[in-house]
Length: 174
Length: 180
Image 1 (cartoon, each protein chain N blue to C red):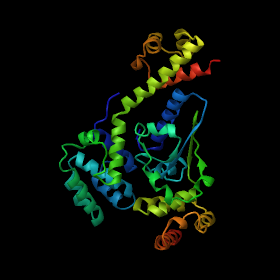
Image 2 (image 1 turned 60 degrees about the horizontal axis):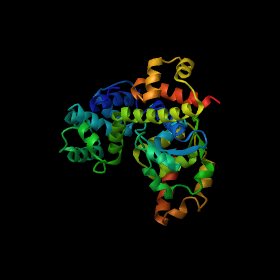
Image 3 (image 1 turned 60 degrees about the vertical axis):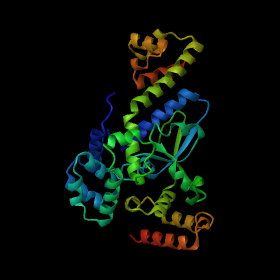
């Protein structure tokens, strides 16, 4: 079994879930918000060939942070949280993971697309193309987020915003 | 549990990433430079490990990838082996981020025995706590779960973590929790 396949991700989440049960029992629930390749794989937004080398954590319950290294999770991406749409939490989606105490979330499809548009590496363009081919991005919802100046534009300079919107148009024209 | 050498691990992962269980360098290089940019970094690590670096460079037609490969090769020049570097370095900030992520993944795979042992220890502590509070015997546990009596006794009484699998230690913990 590959460490990078979806089964590898699920195995790590299950072991983490059971670790949390061991430490805290069933008295409380914990949550993590996954982004990046792990999110695409867990929400079936990526083809079977998609892989991720680690699990990118956007936010998590504080108790989970000490487990990050153990399960090849990292919160580096959280330093870019200020660039994410402001209201992503209102749109985030629960991943189909049957945790005893752990709830796993990711961003909405459109917010995932926005993070990919922001990064705009070759690998992100590959993901965006796959999402577009699968019809998993609602253009109307995407534009509703982008047209709300409090979501993204507020965190960018005018030049950065202009460049970003050009990327959006380029993407939508693929 | 046998620890993976970097060589075995990267070969396994490259086979998976290839999509068709292949280690054909020409095909892998072609995919990495066209449809699967995510293969760029692990492919170089694989080539270094299998001493096929020059062969890979000869297959690279994209100048941006060639330059990035040469930079990474320069950064790794003073290391005897990728395995020893991956297991000894605190972080991989001297490499581009994607390389660091792969090496961190290898390190996590190498350290899985410790991770599993720590998970078993957590389960054992919780299990002992519940067992003592509820007055459950070891016999009840191994009979209910169909486990080896000697192994369960050694695990529950003496914390012999090596006597049960991670799954069994989890099952024991959840069984004890389930008892009212």
